[in-house]
Image (cartoon, rainbow, N blue to C red):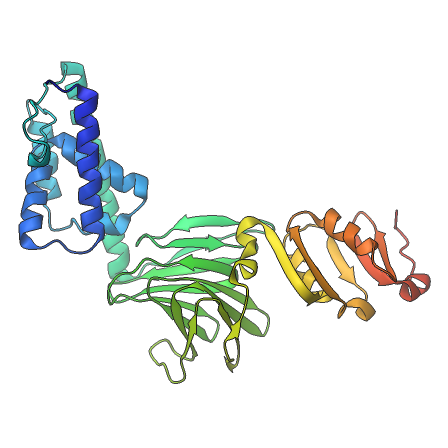
Length: 356
C-alpha cells in the first residue's frame, strides 16, 4: 500500500506531537535524545512539523529544551537536502516513502528553513531574556480583559484595570501584580517555582491555579486548584507562610489572615464576565460594577450595607440597576454621567438636577 503525501504528512505531524509531549514532560534521557535527534535529522519536514506544533502550542519553554540540538546544523541540512522526502520514523516503518513533486519539495524546504530561523530567533530571545531577567509588562484598560500564555506555558488571565510585570530567570518564575487582579494557571516545572508579588504579599505556587486581587489596603488570594504558600516580606524569606488549599481564600492586610472557605468558581466568575454575590454589602457590589462600567454607580451611605444576592453580567449595569429599583425604599436616579442609588428619605432631600 502506498501512502499519499497528505497521509505521510499527518503521520509525521502525529510523531511531532508525540516528541513535543515527551520534551514537555522534562529532559530526555540520553537514549531518547539520540532517537529524537535522529528523527529530526531524517528530514527537514520533521523539523518543520515539530516547530509548527511548538508554535501552535505557544510553548517557548519546550522549544528552549531543544537548545542542545544543533539547530544551525539542522537548518543547513534542510537547505542542502536534495530530496526532502517525508521519511517516516521506525514507529511507522514498512510504509514506502513518497517523493514529493518538485514544487512541493521546494515549498517544504522554504517552510522548514523559515520555521527553523524563527525557532532560532525565538530561542535566542527567550534564553537571552531569561539570562538577564528582562521584564515584560502586560496590562488592561478600564473594562478590558485579556489572556496571555507565558514563556513556560503557564496562562495569565488579566482582569480589568490590571497590570503585571513578568520576570523569568533560571532560578524562578516571578510575576509582580502592579495593580488589579489576575488569575494564574501555573505549569509545573520541577524545582523552578512560580512566585507572585502583590505589594508586600508573596504567593508561591507549583502547578496550581489561583487568583490574586490587589485592592487598596489589602490583597486577596483565592485558590481554585492545588495549594499555594502565602507570606509577607522579602521574597527570599518565608517567616510565617500559610498554606492555602483549593476552595480557600486569604486576605493580606499587613499580615496573612486565616484561610476562609469560599465558593472558588464564584470568586473567579469574572473569567466568564460575571459578578456573583451572596449577601454582600451593596456598596461593595457597586464598587465591583464600577470596575467594568463607564458610568459610575453611587450608593447612598444609608444603603451601602444593604445585603445583596445575585448573578449578573459584569458589563450589564442596566440589569443590575433595574433589579435594585424593585427593592423597597430604594430610589434610582440616572443621568448621562452617573447613577445614584438612594433611600427614599435621601432622594427627597437630594434631587439629582440632571436626572432623566
